[in-house]
Image (tube, rainbow, N blue to C red; front, side, top):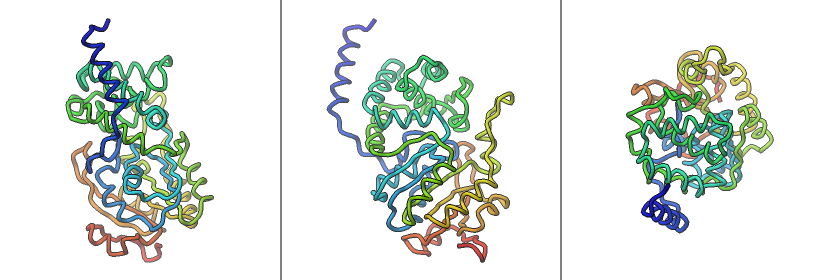
Length: 324
């Protein structure tokens, strides 16, 4: 039962929430979630490599959608946006963030007041809620945000489990009242955006019918590290592995009709999958492993900033002679 003081605090929170404006996002806050292999640390560079005059934009394998949010923040998309992924919890979260923003923020604010941040008991509650078939979509979305903020990097895109809890991440500022308030801004940025639970191949078909000024950005599972990150630990019921040969053929078909940017690891086999595009190699720091590794960015167009922009970013042009 609530005490009188707790009830008064709840009323005050609701008044402040209903009257509050969407806060301005700091330049280092790129997405509402963290994600295995996410691009939050790279989007400032990636947007410099975009084509001119983007009409509709497509983001299959969207993950935390940091590229979309950065492009939206900079008003770089003139037409419609499409965010798609095969992770049901992620898609539900994005739906609720778009359609029930203030209810989501209010629920998370209440949980924060009761638990005081990302503690183990709140994490366990979130996992139980996510695994329950009696939870509402709103409860699922709030619990997924809690899980995402308090689980290890390698766990956030995989199955929901209590062994994924991270004391280090749970104690960081990501689970704070301010971080919850930022969801108001991210929800506003999702207004009018199409969000679907679908395979990247379906999204590619959308883009194929959209016109030459459309833009597709995809950050798929990586050839080696990606398979370890995206395949379930449960050997009795593993998830489907990612078919890179099929992906390569789909990119080849799409790049002939629309602007395309692909980010992938830069080992020999990965480079061969996209050698029909312009390829750049650069070094990336992975927060999950705390190590640097080489990645590639493949595009099929001339960036609006000019062909010398890659040099200014210290990206090495590794394109084959026959590439676009």
